[in-house]
Image (spheres, rainbow, N blue to C red):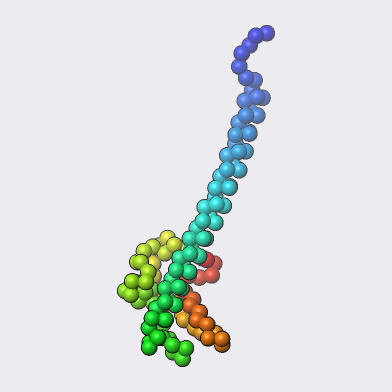
Length: 122
């Protein structure tokens, strides 16, 4: 018999293999995209915290170990320390009223923490 073509079993096997590969690629890409989103969020938060520490350093008369008023995102934008853009953690407009808290450790090290992002969003 000289029939040319594929049998139904052969076609089904190829479809199953292609489907399996498609699922593996989709899961891998989804994980990679999620990891990238988390990295962007962490970098965004770090940029804001670093900007607040710079602001506190430059404005030592307003912000010292004994007293440091709340620093808002709006203040950092007005001072030109960060750009006004979308929040990389929520993909929404940045909350300009969010607070960055500046504290000092007992060793005198400055610590800046952005309060605009809830822990599960980091």
